[in-house]
Amino acid sequence: MLASLRSFFEVVLEWVTILLMVLLTVIVIVAVLFRIAGDSLSWYDEVAAICLSWITYYGAALAALKRRHIGFDSVLLALPVYPRMIALIIAETVVIGFFVIMAWAGMKVLEVLTGDYLVSLTWVPVQFTQSVIPIGAVLFIICELLSLPEYWRMTAHGKSLEHAEIEEEVETELKKAGAN
Image (cartoon, rainbow, N blue to C red; front, side, top):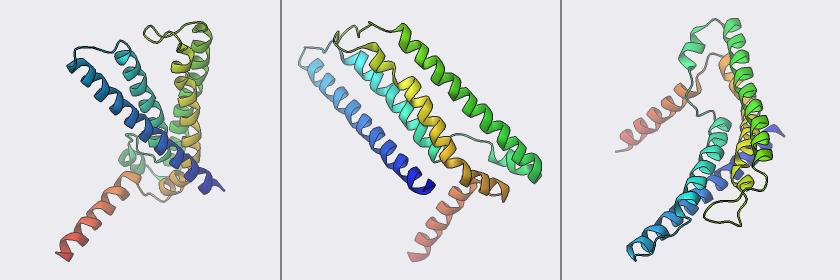
C-alpha cells in the first residue's frame, strides 16, 4: 500500500512539474516572439515568476519523495547505529516541523491576501497563486513521510542513498565501457 501510494505521488508530482516547465517554456517563447514583434505582453513577468515558484515547490516535494535534497549521509553514517538513528529522528522532526510551520504560515498569508488580484491579470486572485505555499508544504511533509521507511532501513544498515546512486552510475558506465 505504501509503495503504491509513493508511486502515485511520484507520477503525479513528475507530471505536474513537467507540465509547469512546459508551460513556463511556452510562456517565455510567446513573450519573446511578442517582444520581437514590438508588442510586449504585460502579464509575462508576473506569470513567469509564479510558474517558476510553482515548479520550485512541486519539484521540492518530488525531490523529498526521492530523497534527492542535499544531505549529510557521510556524516550521519559515520556515527554508531544508535546515535545515527537518534540523529535521523531529530533531523526528520526538524524538517517536518519546519514544513508544518510553513503550511500554517502559508494559510495565514492566504487569509491576508483575500480580495487581492494580480496586477497584470486582474481576474486572477493572488490567493490562487500563493496557494502553492501551504500546498507545497503539505506535499513536502507527505513525501518526506512516504520516503522515510526506506531511508530509515538504509540508514540503519549503514547505506547511503547518495553513495548508492553514485555506485549504480559507476557500474552502469563500467558495463558500457566493457561492452565497447
